[in-house]
Amino acid sequence: MALKITILVGTMTGTAQLVAQELELAWGDDDTQVETLLMENADPSVFQRDGVTLICTSTYGQGDVPDNAKALYEELRTERPDLSQVRYGVFGLGDRTYAETFNFGGKRFDELLAGLGARRIGERVQHDASSGVLAEETAEEWGAEWLTLAREAAGHAA
Image (cartoon, rainbow, N blue to C red):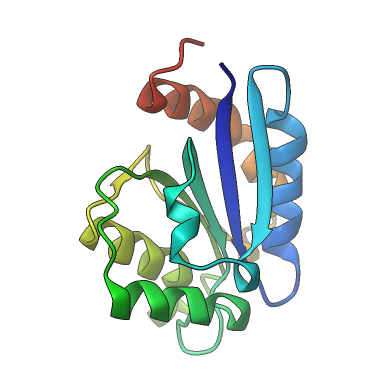
């Protein structure tokens, strides 16, 4: 049975969506079904799907989640659903020149999901736009290892 991965994208400029598309291309095969959803098209019920979830989000303004992610974030915060059956990963995008709020979009989702009982797979990625390395390149390098961890977490053999 194929591993199902839902990638939820929070983005202002489209970079997080490019990362998600890169991962979808790298991961999608007979053993892995990947679906990418922009967060404005999702509500908390998205976490009831089979498989694992990847939060792929940038940071905006004063360390906020992107505009298209605000409704989902607030619904999770106020409704507080039980997410103890959820396994997830976080690929955060940020710019270290904003040191006070670097990568807070990913951090906020990570802390919220963990607080609702979800368990993270692997470490939270904190891509730095000022590093000179494209987010898609970081995703490609990180993606293979995370996919292996996701398979283990979901009980799928490699």
